[in-house]
Image (cartoon, rainbow, N blue to C red; front, side, top):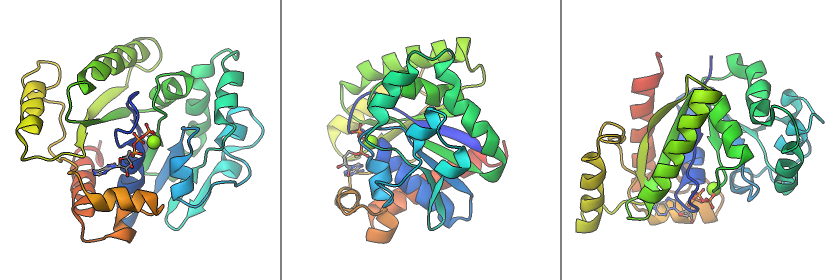
Length: 254
Ligand SMILES: Nc1ncnc2c1ncn2[C@@H]1O[C@H](COP(=O)(O)OP(=O)(O)OP(=O)(O)O)[C@@H](O)[C@H]1O
Ligand SMILES: [Mg+2]
């Protein structure tokens, strides 16, 4: 049965889409059955997988206009629930539905046996769509840059996720905080990491893998490819491979 991870941070540009795309790609390369879910109206993940403009997207799924089987699309070994530019409108429409926070969970339940890992790419907000992802997920991963302001965001994410856990999804857990775009040798990065590791709440919650700053990751995104296709020998591919191994070691047998 699939384990569901939502990748979320309400701050923009913290590597959510890059993480979902590259972690998903490497898990699929390891012969895991992978479904990615695009919950962002920017549709960056859908575009990166060449599925922009297809019919029957996650918007139709949320509105009950298609089945999950119709909505899931394929790109090689990766399956995707694609987004479309109607997603903002869709979020507005479902906001008046009773039980709106449970829609994604209800849809994914039908296909849990078909996958090993489901990874959800969230928008940079904590609105109805991100809450849907937290209700559906077993775990959440917070990708974060080593910078001061990130902490303020982290408090908000933790308080929202605690409410979701208490009221809607008791089994929700923080899988960990993933540092991305890290320049590990700079004094500033070291200071931010030390600060976080000395915090009671988070000291055991950092993944040991860091995703280093890598131009190949930035370029591969611009060329709408995973870093494994674009630059297989880059730091980016090495780091996402390590991250996949860390996750598998911890969660494959759970
Ligand atoms: N490790 C990295 N090194 C260098 N650039 C990176 C790295 N990770 C991501 N980027 C670049 O940073 C930018 C933001 O990344 P990404 O789109 O994954 O963030 P996001 O959290 O999904 O953004 P949004 O909140 O807008 O959805 C992109 O241009 C991406 O290519
Ligand atoms: Mg994104």
